[in-house]
Image (cartoon, rainbow, N blue to C red):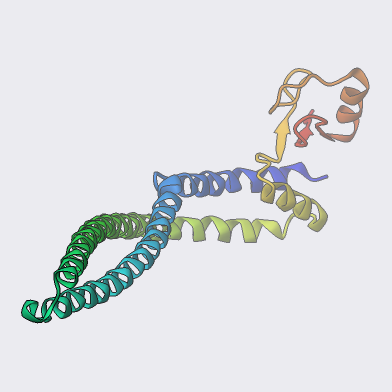
Length: 233
């Protein structure tokens, strides 16, 4: 294996790799997904609250109809002329009137509770909308910073990629394919130098037979970290 070209390739690729890692692991790495999830949760919560509000408003409308019907019934009771009624009829009418009054008091209390409920839902809805708007604004601001940083880094990225494309013509296709596969799996650097009798990355000490094979063939895949250990005399 021609180590000179692939090691030169890796050296240039290291600058690209470090730049990519800096961009990938910026301050927004964890913030953007969290803000996006916050916005989605707020949207779902808003939809739930809208459903609850619609149900309460429907119940209030039905209750108002019941109150109106109860009031009408109360007025109908009072239409009777006491002069034409017996004492027993008057007593029955008064009992009905009391029941209607009690019903109206109970219905009014229930209506008040529903009104309080709708106010609570509205307050929670407004709070949820604010959370959504704040998360959306923060997301847009951070995304804009991310895009600016990427745009600023793009010329350097293009320059490094151009150098790699030019150098790749000097490297055995199978070697380059192997390298890119390891790189895609986040195994970087792919090639590491033998340090003493150990892997230059994970520091695992090689056996005597592995060491002998490495010095004979110049390269050996580390059994621990899966990188390629190289040896130059």
